[in-house]
Amino acid sequence: MSGALRLGTRASALATTQSGHVADLVRERLGRDVELVEIATEGDVNRTAALAQLGGTGVFVSALRDALLEGRVDLAVHSLKDIPTTPADGITLAAVPVREDPRDVVVARDGLTLGELPVGSRLGTGSPRRVSQLAALGLGLELQGIRGNVGTRIRKVRDGEVDAVVLARAGLARLGRLDEVTEVLDPLQMLPAPGQGALAVECRSADTGLVAELARLDDAATRAAVTAERAVLSTLEAGCSAPLGALAEVVEGEDGEELWLRAVALSEDGGLSVRMSATGPVAEARELGTRLASDMLAEGAADLMTASPSRDHQ
Ligand SMILES: NCc1[nH]cc(CCC(=O)O)c1CC(=O)O
Image (cartoon, rainbow, N blue to C red; front, side, top):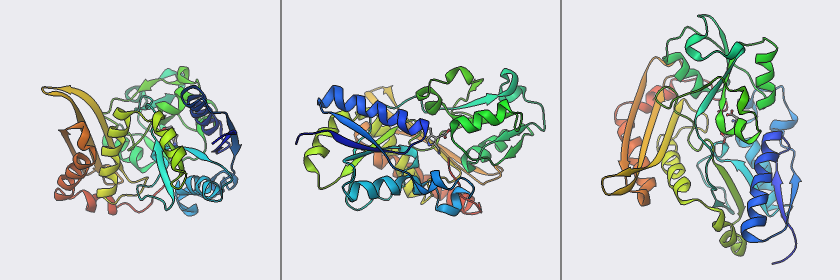
């Protein structure tokens, strides 16, 4: 194959930065020329409707997949945490490059941390996962649903519309805005969304040559971690935005490297939760996630989450 590869991307600052990063990897590692092709999605065009009304974060993903299947682009880059766990016909997840730090962070007024925010402070987040875990901390914060891209959410703090927001550290890192962070949240308090901080590089399954080439961008440790996290998500049959956190890390065990997986499922108000962890071989990531989720189901995890009425994005 020759000629420039066309890489489909959403037009937001975060999406084009992520896509630019993957384009650089393709040029460096595969020696291929790449051009970015911006694809408008319903979620970008319609900024007023709640994401849940538009069909959840899937609206961002499906426009790029349509562009792939129609041959308008050759590969597409998404935030992995926005991708539903059910595979799409004709699309292959060809690479998951090295992950950014997956933790969530706080951006608060006056450099404050969560614990320093006075009772009644307004904290903006549209994510049930963040809302439930923040509520569970019992800080007396007033949680407000907000939407918008990373820049918009930070501006709401600057403008005094809210006192703080919680965001993925990875997004800020990619945008070069880590200086705005006032606290990095420990996973003990706030488990990230499955796949948070990782990128997904997709292409057409029929494009077998490109599938093989893109596999060289894959990072084995990241792939194992997100496979375990997403197995929790699919076994619990949760949407991509359920009140569910999961984080897997490759750690040094007694017999060498192993995968350490932690997960929590909560009721939307954070009042009830099932939290568990397990370790297993890195090569059996999916089994580890499935097993942990089954144990969580036995403790009533599904009932907790289905009690939650609304589903929005992470
Ligand atoms: N749901 C929106 C979204 N999708 C990916 C990221 C950040 C990058 C990442 O998590 O990989 C964000 C913003 C956020 O959650 O703060």
